[in-house]
Image (cartoon, rainbow, N blue to C red; front, top):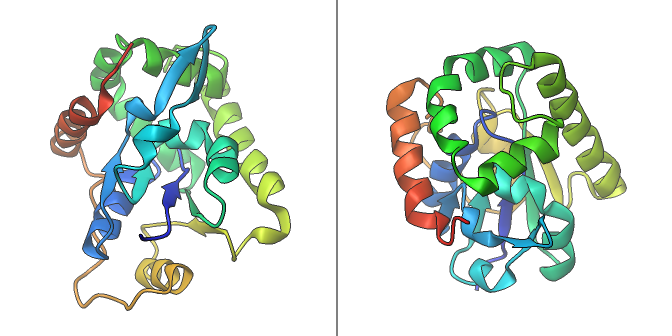
Length: 202
């Protein structure tokens, strides 16, 4: 069994690109699996049985659970995808309309609120605070394990394959690093995957 890999960057930080990169490396990777979350007294908690079905998981449901995943699956690898915050906000602005559809899902609304304290994607101050807080909390949590159990990765940088493969102990592929953070086509692809791996969504 492969070591579990958890992409714990929040949405619009290159999580789709990371998912496809992991698939190229041979991991059974799934993007934005809402099914790993369960409501427990109005709080989102881990459904560990779902994690057994795949090797790698990415995006905001995974980011919400990094502490629980670390405890439940010792020895796993964690990847915090990052990007400059102003570019991240620009991406959020472009995607407000399709995200409004996703906010119909109770788990998505709760995830946004847990990260930013609001469900409004127009409250950019709250979104920036949530973005910065998540990065700080992850780095504080892993501490000296940075580089061993945690990789901080900017997928748009030219060394993404080198960093990812070095971290995972995998040979570097001959194909370019995938980039899937470009517009509505990618969003539609993501939404189809989200629906496929979301159940139960309530």
